[in-house]
Image (tube, rainbow, N blue to C red; front, top):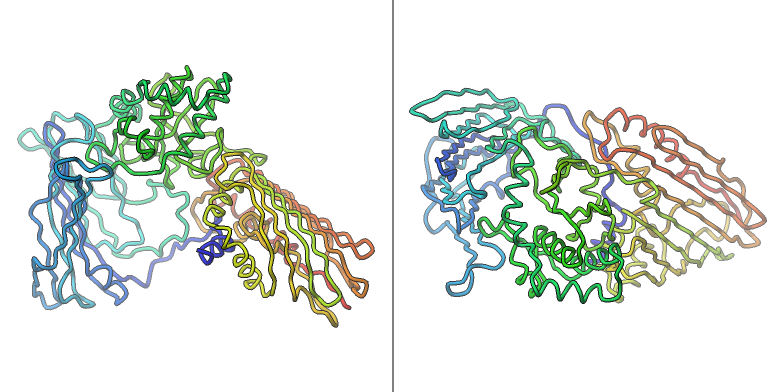
Amino acid sequence: MIRLFLLLLFFLPTSYISAETEYSTDIDSRYVNNLTYKINEDYTHEQTVRWETEILKERALEKKKKGYISYSASIQKVEDIEAYTLKKDGTKIKVPETNFQYKTNTGKDSNSPVFSDRSSITLLYPEVEVGDKVVLSYKIVQTEPMFPNKFSTLYYFPRFYAYDDINVTFDYPGSINAKYEIRDMEKTLKSENGRNILTLKHKNEKPLKPRTNYTAWSPEEEPGYVFSTYHSYEEIADAYADRAIPKAAVTKKVQVLADKITANTNDPKEQAKLLYNWVARNLTYSGNCIGVGAVVPRDLGVVIDNKIGDCKDHATLLQALLAAKGIKSIQALVNASTVYDLPKVPAVESVNHVMTYLPEMDLYVDATSKTVPFGMLPNGVIGKTVILVEGEERISRIPVNSPDDNQYLQDLYVKINEDGSAEGYAEYEMSGDYANFTKQLFQYITPEMKDELIRKMFNAQGYIGSGTIQNDDPKSLEPKFSYKLDFKIDNFIQSEGAGALDVNSLFSYSGSIIGTAVKSYIKDVENYNVRCTNGIVTEKYAFELPQNFEILSIPNNSKVDEAHIDYKSIYKNDNKNLTIERTLIDKTPVVVCTPDLLKKQHSAGLIINKDINSQILYKN
């Protein structure tokens, strides 16, 4: 766990900007796919799948030797499985029955499962070698639509996969009014015996090199399709609301719990905060993957008694608790992955998360997140399109944070001794995204781990040292988080002769200028959008120098003001007291940055990087 923490601390993911647009010269597999959807009048459907994978590299063998089928046992069944290895000489070696493994999630005795009815079939292909093909075909019969009288599906074929042949067919009644969006695929539509046959074809024989950053991925960039009988995202929200809102009824159990949580206040906003905090702290996350339960919240009695729930359960319980205190709230659907702009054709698969909107306070909250305070949102949903399940204006975009919302302050003091050792302290105070991320890290650190953690952090920088950590409660839902480190280092500088002193954070790279901002700015920029953030970082350094210590030179002050980036540094040497202050203000007004903006920030980042890598020269 310490190793994991160190990796996260020193190599925190940032808006790192690199992509390849050249053709790939190192392909390990090639694919052929045939996929057919046969949709019935009652909106149930059959999905027939056939994958043929050619294995080109040794490294692909381990993964491709296994086939996998997943399905929901309560509303789906699997039929007509065929699997075999196709040797280079054309020989077929059928997967024997002994090479299949079935996994089924069920409840005790005749009861339904409480978490998931997802079942799976895993198979092992025999005698697979490089140059062979593995083939798997099967049919999934869906006996109940996810939402009544509705159907939707979507699929993408990334440009960095080698597709020799893709064939997709939709066979559906002419009475069904379907919409579809087709990208970079050949399309044929015909009618036969009262049914429509939509056929799509695609090839990608020369795949591109894969992107290295998918933090802001647009479905519109890839070949693929959306097929849907929904005609608006509001219609999707209505279908969800028909099943979810009745679950948010204020029962006696809900009323008693709401009254208990808010017993000490009558202020609506404080009540809302207390209710949010209770749900966020007390409900452990557990997915509800049981047939249509994947889109229907659990009964709130089950949620309260067991203190478990997925995003739907968190939002539904919070809505009921708020209603018990007379506070209006609306559930909201959003894409919680890397999609910021929803496809033009609405599909249920495009929205995969549920939050809460409080219209009287004009606040979005996400009670699924255990570290994000009331009134704030996780970074992954900020700036995205959100769909309210009721109201007049149903579709809007979540506002972007102000830089003032995300602040990081470091105050580092180091007393350097004549023998080259040092002692001191470092205090860190942060808010917003900086606080939320750091709280998540500290939740994994036990008191027994702290001393070892500091020792390893010093070792990673070439120091021999020790120290102690004091920190706020990482489970707190307050908007700020702080921690302090007291330390001693045996070999901070050379005790004789001349040397150079780096001025960088000794401990926290999760918010420092060198650890996040500069690394995000100075990456090479390629031709696609990536997620970006904003915030204010202030780093203060104070070095108390020994009498035998002579400063030979200090860096010049630096200043940058371009592409929404303000930066300045001030270096002062005052009679054995050396102070440095650096301030970075990232005012980026968007959460998805274009290549043009990133190129401008790249130029600013190079100047900042030069400054923070400058050194103080000394002799003693």
